[in-house]
Image 1 (tube, one colour):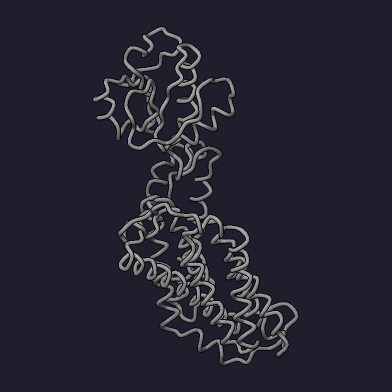
Image 2 (image 1 turned 90 degrees about the vertical axis):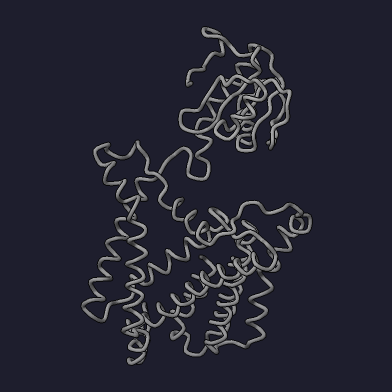
Length: 387
């Protein structure tokens, strides 16, 4: 987003440079390149979307005809490449793992983003009497925003606002661009953002067809959310040129305000959507720690979902004597205690004759122990009912 903002800012104010903006445009392109190199460093799944962004920003810069082509090319390549060489290059060269966080379905990719975007509001912030209202918002608000944004886009295309914006010659101003040139800039920026999103998704689909590289899903598809949000915001910012377009724009703005209110009530200080299955991990660790203290249990195996959190709790406590946890899938047999996802591993529990002594009330985490180790009612580590 910073890469887009820096380059877009130059195009918004290009008229104030009066033909002397070559150095500023080259600098903006270089900064954008560095930002995209950092984005790739933070998340390798941004490779295609980041590369597409840089190419389209470079095309936009070249079309401005304000700086030599070769200087723009160097500015677009060298900073980003330098960042990658200095920071993640070793990891890239030694990365041999198969990518498993992905999907083969375009529909599943979009639904994963929609589901994460409307993740449940916090029960500590909402009056219980309003839960019905928030349930309605959960179901219909994001689809309504998308539909209203598409309608607004159709009005923009029908009225051809970018052409009308060029009828008035831009005038220099100390603070802001003229209203008409501002609309033209918004249209250009919106086209850029939508093009990045569409091309990036298309590239991922093509990569899957050619190499079976899984398409991004959930957090690996995260680049789509700010791009779509920015595109919708741009559509809402473009002034309406007809009564119908004006009503559509007001409806879109109202839905965005409502979405902001909904997101406010989704804030939380604990778990979030990506890690909601670890809600009960702290309490589960207390059970495992009790078996260590009371029965000298040293042999604990954990599912991949929980091993990192269990290791954090182990280091935080510093009082238990078992070693670090490793995420094991599938489970190996013969251990004393298992930290597992009980909804998926009931067959394993039954086959091994284990006893589930703890079930998380908010998630699927469970503690299964060897039947002869299970604490009876009244014991120091006893927990178990549910079922």
